[in-house]
Image 1 (cartoon, one colour):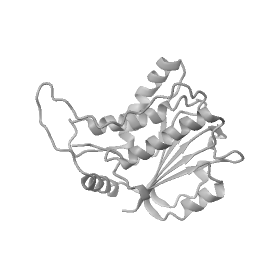
Image 2 (cartoon, helix red, strand yellow; image 1 turned 60 degrees about the vertical axis):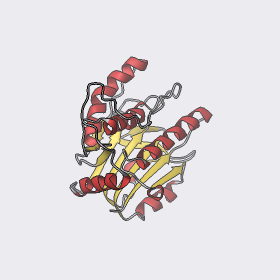
Image 3 (cartoon, one colour; image 1 turned 60 degrees about the horizontal axis):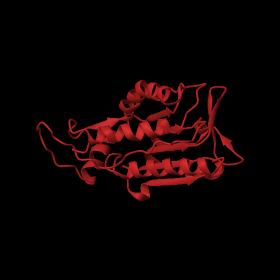
Length: 242
């Protein structure tokens, strides 16, 4: 199966934002390369830093692949119910108007943010489970098995597009809490020894975030932020370690 992850960093207003944006570009890259994220190879992941719209559209339109994950990290807004994204210093685009040439597409939008202080660091350390009270010990799967599980799950999904938003309309996305939660929760599922050879879909991960993230953000900064997902396809997002 031909697949690709495209990570797009939009315009950063200052060095603080640039540092935080790049941190999460690298976090997504590391996650998807890992077994947890589907064991993507380096040539299956593209990182674009403040690209021009014409170059981005040309790249996406020429993909011609079966599955594509596209991640936008940067400033955004909503206008007339359309999501906007500040691609570079001079261009604001509507991501939904890009010419996606993939049978199955997952779009993740980490946008509409205000604060960048105290950015949470995602913990992707490979912590082995501790069986304090005994239990079954299984051997971790390898990259070949992870890819096989990923591809088999993908083949069972219908063609279409899934859109994941960091927040709902008329809300802001703060401090990259959405990306932190998405990657961290997925890695937690990966390390959970109670799951055996299981593929956890983006629907499963998002359902948890939609319930938990609002309380987390409110506790942290007293704000309202509710992630949203559109599209009902169960595209794989996290692979169990055992």
